[in-house]
Image 1 (cartoon, rainbow, N blue to C red):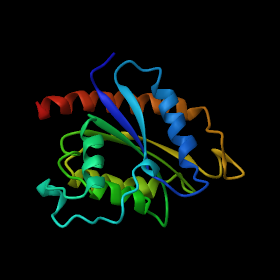
Image 2: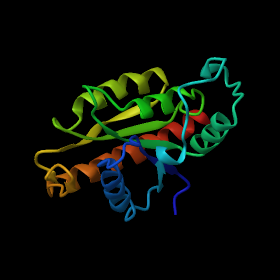
Image 3: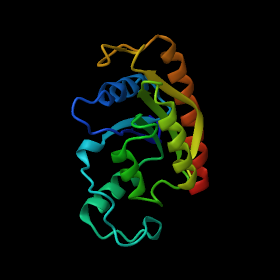
Length: 187
């Protein structure tokens, strides 16, 4: 088994969310891989209020227990796959808030993006790419975008097209490669 750990972060806490089945699909596909250990992190399990730390996250001086718990969880990973819905041409507020809580825990690690929405969530990914760059994350080119019109039956039952399997393999390969490379940067 690899010594690399990658979190699949489910970026929606909305009741009836489609994100859980998408994240589960990603984790299922990753389960057959030996290059890294993948773990689902559901933001519903980390109820963070709107950013409530007095000091900027870049200072790393967390005061609140919920921030410390979140920082400890995130720090243990070498890379991340962010699973995001697209809300109003961007990512979800809960995901952006969770990302904004931390700084050093994200630095010099790799990231990939999976989205879903009416246009496949592509606009949410574009916003997350800018955020990841600011956090000094190496994000990979390959992304997965699932359309509510073609990859979901009645906008709720996840039935992704077969073409997503090949794209997922590329995403995992790129992410594992960059995750391995970024470990040397942090060494």
